[in-house]
Image (cartoon, rainbow, N blue to C red):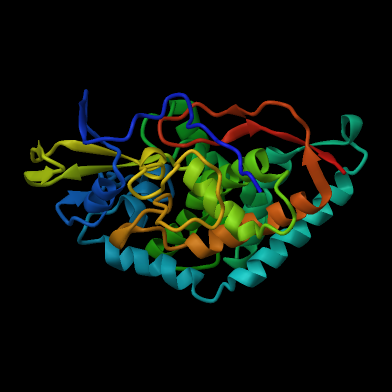
Length: 340
């Protein structure tokens, strides 16, 4: 069949050599992004510690924002928490909960419409994952994780930080007893999954709900991750001088790595704007190197379970999607579908 073209989001930069920006460099080529992600001289901006049980404490304790010497041990805590979670079981559990949710909503909305983001994309993956990670009340964990995710990255408003502080305390009460670092990294898995998994489901619904049934959902998600990634960029800081694609990067300069552009690099993905499931070539949305996402298989399984059900029971509603303003994330605020 003839697959459609999906243009990049309006503010996606062009693919090319690193270009200077107000606060450092913007890196867009696939090979350059991989080079930075795998170069030990390029490190994640480290979060400062804060009072125990607060958002600042969480950010200062999770592997995501840890210094290179602390990262391996903290990452191992998250990997251990995921070790016994079977992706196939996660997919089946997400599909069951999504189906039960649609059963309750059938006929309840206007003209058989369903709002995907709040009802399914933001709730189902987190509730399933929270249950498997041992939280006492998985449904109650969902709004708490959402509140933390809203303030997780720098620049959040004070009111959002205050809500996140209360939410971190609530999540610690729900989490199974564990040493502080282990508890923080268990919660961190949920927070990392919140926007990224919801955004992936939203993008899959927007671009792939009308795809032919023979197309496997896993292949659909892989191409959606390439063309409309929920995590559009990540940051690194050069700890020493380095040369990148002919550009001299000085120590302490910031690097903004654009996954959205690198995933459309024609050197890796010919005809890059064409939606073509099953194409070869590495997609960078989950990162690479020692800080690549440890929960990639789990996130894809949770998203696939929800999308499986939506593909079977729903069709596009034809309404435009709106997006949460954010410098590095792309997550719809609302997205409607219709029952078949």
